[in-house]
Amino acid sequence: MRFLSPHYRAISSIVLACFLWGTTGTAASFTQGISPLAIGAAAMGGSGLLLLLYARKSLWHDRGRLYQQRYLLLLGGLAVCSYPLAFYSAMAFAGIAVGSVISLACAPFFAALYEGLIYRRWPSVRWLCSFLIGSSGVLLLALQQPANSELSDDYQLGIALGLVAAASYALYSWVAKALIEQGVASASAMASQFGLSALVLLPLLAVVGDNLLASLSNSAIVVYMVLGPMFIGYLLFGYGLRVVSASQATLLTLLEPALATLMAVLVVGEQLTPAGWFGMLLILICLVLQAEKRQAKKSHTGGVAE
Image 1 (tube, helix red, strand yellow):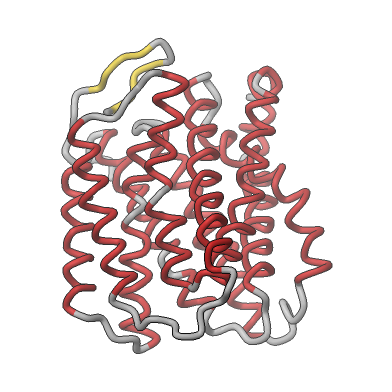
Image 2: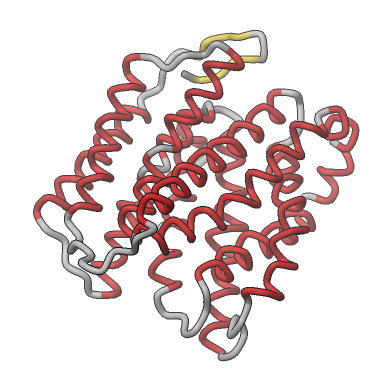
């Protein structure tokens, strides 16, 4: 990607991360007897350890800046810890389609809200249009799936947990961006948050981790999710955050549910209705709008491509 500008390299890195994240649902569907909570805790917690090892030199170099931002870092670690628990619980209570849509489509809103309240960086008209188009596409992808006639009575709790997941995802993305703007390397910004979350998520496996390594296929899928979508995916995401804002980055990740749906069609054999294909088209339009290079605006925290 050397021939691309820094802006487009950042966009490409986030899009590639979305491709990896979009495979998680299909991969998890091939596991047997594993709780969704266990998959989330293992993937996020395991990747936290790998990120710590990968970024150990960078973390040592940035230790002073990280200590100065320790309260912000703790906030980000708590957000990383709560995200997989809230996300997978939302799907359990409200259904996979609704839970994932709420968790993913609402994250850009929370990211923009954080930036607006803290930095007074309110989103542009272009961003709002992109958000509406992309969110509509994600919603169409969810609605094209067959309705669940046996939906749990805890549906509203699932919606609430989806909002918690969206707020958590946007929060640790914003914290990573804030740390980077304070001079912390992108690898350190992601590894420090994920490392803190591993202190909670990995011990949790003692409670919810039944059958996690019961078979070779289960073990292989867990290893893939730790190495691919979580470890490499979040390294790419952190690289992208060096250039783009947290709100733009989370908006670009609306590509993830589209890719997850496409994987389900091609690999698992699920059907996609015309409305679902139109939803994917809307998400691609959203990405095109966001990929257009815009003039960087300066703020008191540094220049961010808006």
